[in-house]
Length: 283
Image (cartoon, rainbow, N blue to C red; front, side):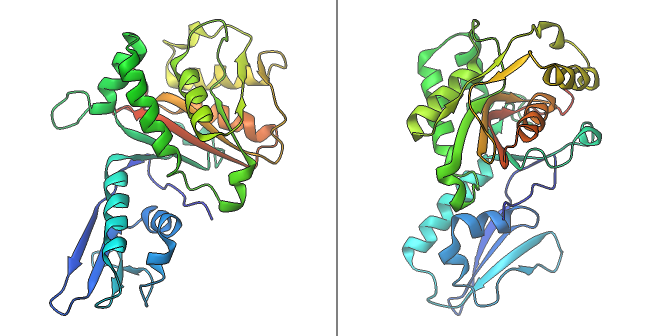
């Protein structure tokens, strides 16, 4: 089962408690993260005799491990998982666009936010994306693409779907440079996953400055027009990962996922470089 993201954005809260008798408890945020931990570390979860339990405050769940149950390799695996998901941003439907969608995007994740809310400076990946996208820095482009390749392995794709997987980008004009499409190509090449080319045959420049509600309406209209979007593969019954650079309101990615599901995609995952601090684009 794919862990469902219940909030518009979240990052992991996690800590280990070590007790005098040698027992250890792993506490994680209550919503999506227990399922993610079970997906990535199933053998460790099985070492907890009582399974997941809800903490007293109700905001976290925990696994209790008796003394000696976890070895050093287990602890290192837990730490690696914790570091990843304390940085990664899980992205779900925000209240702003929820009326237009349901479960078209099965899971979505970003490397980080684009800005640090405490300092109002760009995060590491926010700066890397800016330099790669707007300054055409090849060094930063490599930084972003390497991190996206690594993050791809943390998408909770059902094991039976890993040989059924395709990668694509949000439909764009193939005659113009698009950094999101470039990322999709790089991730597909590095992971050895077939790339599906999705092209936009109608202009969309007018969408950029529209309020997100209007943008959602117009994107849906573009997909509904028979000749505006072309997909160069049969995706019926396939699992598709959509790779993009920036997630703001989510309209672009969710409309794309809705379109892919209409073509018969079994599951649709989203992987983006950064999530903006706003859920309403540039408004």
